Image: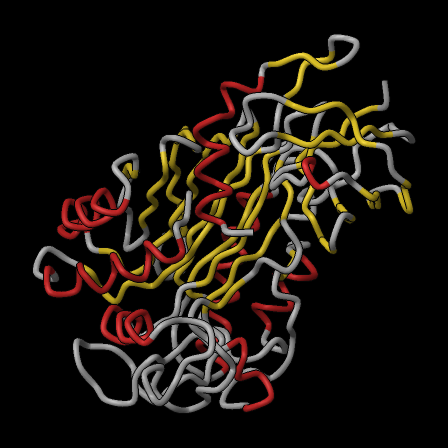
Length: 383
């Protein structure tokens, strides 16, 4: 499914979904949103030469929440301008100690920010609302470089974050994102995040990432092999950039991670230890690969989520062949029977419910008439 079409329609037409079906049940739709994290290499007011490249990269990802590292305060107006050149509803929050967050006002509301002091630089908490569900995102830029001293300093920073997270109410949903500067999953910092902090690595690829061709598909630094603009060189051989979630994600309430959506943007797995512009790129165009090379020494990462708005949930077509469709969705709580509705292309009305076979608590299969083929499907309690 094309993300731009999918997200744009929902953002535009969600107000139209206060409709009634059958026995008068209100219909609402899950709201999809994308979160991206990007180290923008000390972006400041003098970086107008990079704005076109950043526009190219960010417009391809089209995030609803954009977390930045190495963002200087003086670069704020320039960054806001280039983002609003992509979409006029991009809005800034607060730049704090190199961290920044931008969001799409058509999908997301900004609530607050908090600076969390650490052994090196602040970790910044940004609190947003998506469809009535609150989500906190913690923007991190941990200590760089190898060696036990640097590993321990990264651990100390994470322990400061953990102290803050421990004060939150049970069930709070949050993401921890940014440039973690981790070289391997055996490092104390990674082990602390995934064990003591109970964070989930949404990419789910643990291992000795550094300079290891077996992990070429997850590396995010460096996009370059020649030094310019203050960035690192050496080609793609490190996984420094992460998005992790609290365990409260994917509990069938609030915000849910869409499995398989985590992306190291521009990494096709074929650029180990070489520049991102060396030869063809299997996942982005030559123009986008060049923009990634010129914009920063890091690749951005992103992941997709939905904000659950009961009682109906958006279903994803996982198979479409001739006149049959298979759907998958996050299980609705406390329900054993479901009805599937197909929506019109403009989401302005719903058809009658479709008959089909439920082959699991969150999987549905049905033959459908050709005129019932739709881009969107919704699932709710059976009438």
